[in-house]
Length: 311
Image (tube, rainbow, N blue to C red; front, side, top):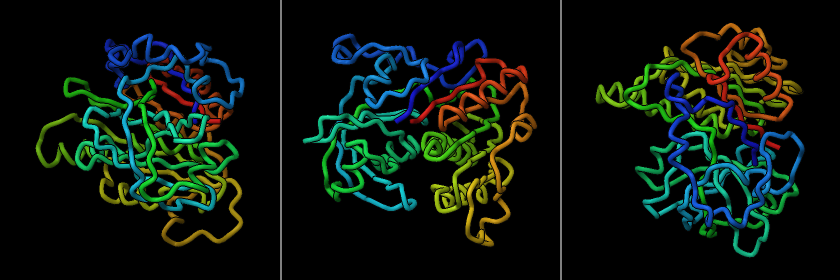
């Protein structure tokens, strides 16, 4: 799972930053009593999700869930759809879940990649899990079956939750590898808000969204069809730039217009800086450190930069 870093001040309403209301999330002391309180601001690798996120806000609701769909998103990533009947279970786009597996002592932590609206309407959330030797990931890839049951709890201070009173904001989403997961949730949520605005003339108004997404090759670009479907549905609102760093095969004609070979560059990001733009970054620590620092050096206010590291 990820290591969460919220740039100080990001949740302050005075700048209308939209990852707000985190203060309403504070779990009780008893809920977190079993967790070790450690600093979340260090980049030191820790293998235990609960330890890494010990001081991160969580909801109190712990809900049962059942696997209702399993798919291969790439050679190394499986996606799970989970049915969560408990109507008190909810999340904000960008958050993750503590993932409790019967018979597995290690607790997993996986970012939700679906939109909050899917949960509200169908009681389903979606996760995408990369194969590693971490016990929860091993279970997902080797033992999980349809109707497998797990328990979930939502946490995280990295989220996008605009309110009707907020001024419209543009979003720049910067993803590396499986760091796409929380940003896809934000992208899907934004698309839902655009649909609500078009259909009902209500809900929140948001600006444009630019997704920069880098992976080793096109087969590891997760959810690329879903992303391009949203780009085609909202051509004036959503755009994307897909980067591959080690592509060894020919790129398909469908993908080619969106693909850049090589890493996401500082200049590409700098071209999207404005007073109305919020930046969300999720990927390996070196990537999040680089872009957050470059944005600060370009005088982007710290409260407009939100990032999450995965390990």
